[in-house]
Length: 305
Image (cartoon, rainbow, N blue to C red; front, side, top):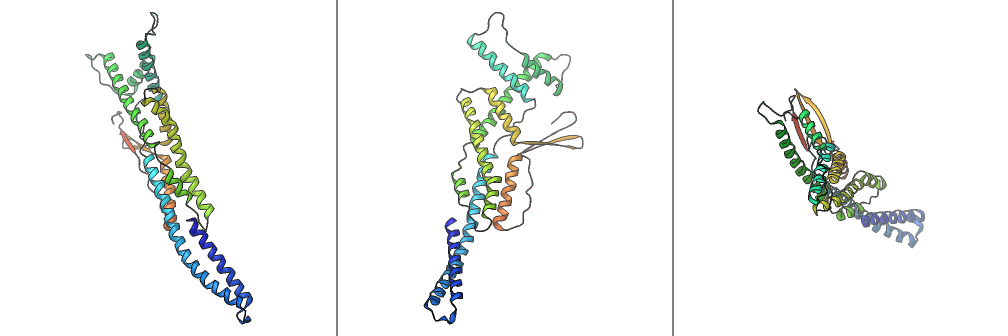
């Protein structure tokens, strides 16, 4: 695109200069310089018209390519999974850390006669279940056994959810940026070049690159865990932090139900910027895209989903 831009500008300058010389000399001067200037003017204006047409074709093509590459990367990043757990993260992390510590103690015989397996975090989480999750009991129910089974089942489910989220971030971190970099570098305009490039950089290009780099940095720890060298509770905290940054939870009351909607707020903002860029490309009116939740759940007054 840069070649088309400079060709257009050069032919425009030559056209203007040759016309200026011809006007200064005048038609009645009978000077060969006037004839040469008019000849140059005729060729230059024809070249300018052709290069201007090619410039606008290349301009749209370059903008389309940037929009396409940005959209591809955004769609890959949007595949990250929401961390959907039904208990406070800090209680879950403490319980998992406690379980891992107890496992290591038993495996390597670090326990002495006075030291016992720690169950404080487990009790805290079970206590939270008793207060917040309705569990049917009757007089014949072994409450402790029922709660312990619930704890084991929940912990297994949490681990599966955390691993799925980690893998989604690992996959998103593998996005290639080469074509995207080239597409941005190819943006070069005659009119409003600084303004358009600045908006494209700040609202789209730089934001997507920073997200990919952030995922790559965190994926290092997830890869260690995949290889059996990482720390699961630490990775959980990293996933939780990413989840809070890239997902937004909104609640609305509908006829006695609490409807919880999950949005990818950061990606929705970038998608909005991409739509504005697309409208500028085709010179059409901008219409704000509707934000669609990636997940939702409805809970009744009785805590039934």
